[in-house]
Length: 261
Image (cartoon, rainbow, N blue to C red):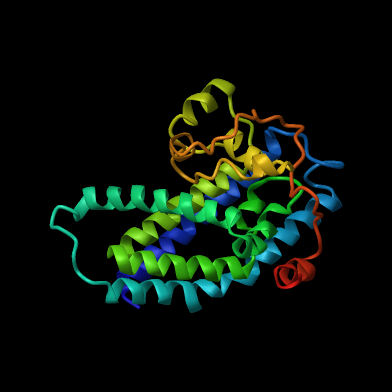
């Protein structure tokens, strides 16, 4: 692997890891919603976090072994059709906006296509939201997402550098809007005009299907109003989180669930 690419991956890991650690601590010191049970530090709270990190650990090896090589292959084999102006700093910004637009539609498809929902619902089965939920995905969804992303990279000739930059931005945004961090109301109202905040995304995890099937945006908040998928439901710290009609399970059962009828 190219040394500059290795350095970029290392810096991305350090930056995202530091962001996760900071918000993980901050949301426990200044929570927006009351922690279930006796709080974030009790046995049940730690078991929930451990379950989420276990699902994440199952995906750790997929990035260097499958996701990154597949993305790099698609980028190297993509046909060269981009105009000269689609390069440099403005090209990177255009790529980031384009990838955010496309991930809105991929996320929406994960809710609307039954086969994709079988895997994505594992993320939604968490009965509470915090930063650890942002890491909780079934390995099947990770692989399907990698295939979809490789197709986009090939068709649109997206540089690998743009993909890595967007991936870092995506992780930072996802950790933030899943967090249980209390924000000043005025600040969050202003912030959600531009980006997805916990007030928007928590409604997406509400245990009512009409709200679960809404608020699909990941980084920029404009996509849902633009395509009429923004839920009118305001966030309530007491709202029930999860999948309507389904219950949480242990790690082994969660991994097996998409393959069961």
